[in-house]
Image (cartoon, one colour):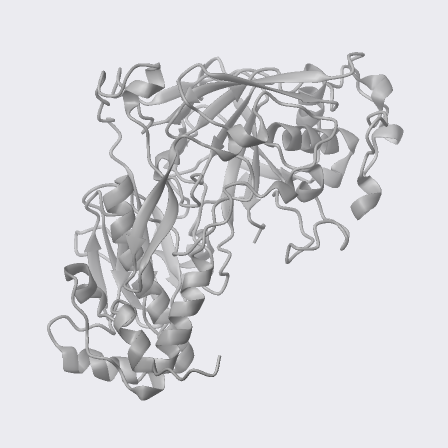
Length: 541
């Protein structure tokens, strides 16, 4: 309206928008910067308020499965009992956030809270995230702590982050990208802290130096710096409320996909799909590659499935998800694949060269101290959905299981989900992995940290493991940090031919799930064949 107002009447409500990050944790602030940035503070505060308004936990636009039914209603997906309202304040008034709060372990046994106590897992691994709050590119090293040169892990652009699965006592250091002789900062992992900041702009105990560093920032640099400051403030309040570190950058939306509930051990859900099992191998000339593009691949309601004559005669396939772990949320689905489908997948390895599996951080292998990664010793290759109709069917069946429209797991036409920024698939190609005796993949996370420029923060959301055989001994999938009241040992899932295991890398509130740590235990006898399907949220980047 025409009523005048001044910046000074607004700023008192935003005391934390311009703090020293070190001082923020103590509840104090640095001096205001200058008139040029007072307007920025106001604009930033208003934008952040809008961004932090929580959307619905489930975006119903992404689910349209007319031929698939399941045991949970939309309301039951939406009203997850583990999601609670968290009140927080970034310095410009109270706000609400729908935060995931891990239930009492007793509830996992369908008992009243306080009946049982959780066991402390033997595995003491932890996520370690490093945040670059500077204007220069820096390199992250693992420090062997013996005086020798460290092992390069990642390069971080200004304002970006990197991370790895770590252990208490692990040491890391940072250097400028082009000069590893200069140590910028050192860190030692000490849980429960999982996020470590490199902030050369804020000088602890020296407000004048901090002010000079702030004044040297450009408008865009100051805005980026302030986003991390705000995220730190939010993260502290999030930890106090949930007892978990906030591994995302605030604000990150809750997932746009449904997440199956895991209220107690042994809980079962069911899903129907018209993507029934193949029981007979179609001839190669019929199987062929998928040539249709975009919306031309949509199968209308009531239409027969592709190559229906080679499938089970039942009109629907019923899939049962059984809760193996409530935190992290992990489910097994027996008979997800048929014998004919398993045989076909393994047949696809003919002529495909399996190469050594890579791990996060391998982009700097030219500087690695080791010729191979000790964390993963398996061999793998990639199988794309368009390879043939049978592989396409597996994606469609997985989409029904995940309650995601199959169109989101393939390249789309522009008219399909036009609100999404990209027409690319939200799923990666299937990763076919082979383990010989002694080969393994030590405990790790599937999620990563998005480029700072991507405000939607795309990341892996769900992992679907498909077992293609049964090793004679070993080869279990382990969740070493599952929350339970009976054992300190990890939860070991036995490979079974045709079985699938589903687990989530994100929590219902959009944070990354540190508890989703998982490992492929060594094969002791025989061999192991496995397929991974990774689905991203909100988009694949």
